[in-house]
Image 1: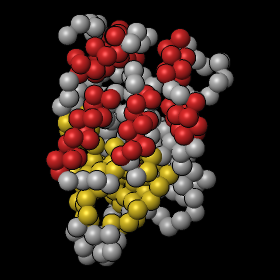
Image 2: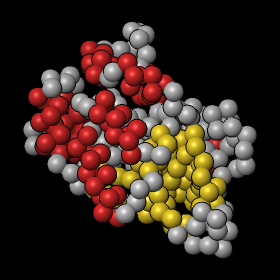
Image 3: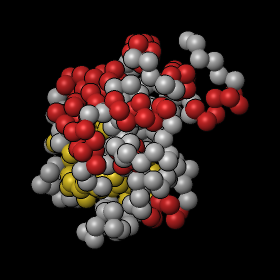
Length: 254
């Protein structure tokens, strides 16, 4: 049996990423697939790029990886420019060069990985999806290529881990390492199967939550003078998306 890890949405949070890497080391898992959004939102995107290049067998492109390296100013506020400039020119080139999808086979199951959906890195599919949303995640598109239909799809983007199955197909959201929005612990998935096995071989999907020092990560962002610090801190502490903070009256303190 082979075990591989699937991670996503580091978002510049080195504290969470290193905690996950240490958890993987303890489990003896060395093959890691990264579903994108390496930088942005958190303070150390460049270091997350370095660690991704060092530890991940493949990193696919997320929406932040797609737009953050761009020099186009029309979308970007002060925080956006800060995250952009925190990356080196080589970091930006690497992010822009990332593939849009990747596939592996374990226990006779074709597993497709991409960031957000088979349509686009910008097309979002939530945990409460429609039947059409589910079908679309397994479709052959320009983003995925015209290969065989996958049995399992792993994606990130929504920062909300879940699994959904229907007629032998499985949709897995691996959650977020650096900016989880379901509970305030880093999330990733372990896939287990036989690389040369058939459908009769065992196959497993395991969700893992890893606690990390949230206050230490916020302290790094504070020391570096990162803009948009308050919503970042609230998201890490509460796992509530920043667009809901004002309505819920969430404070920025611990």
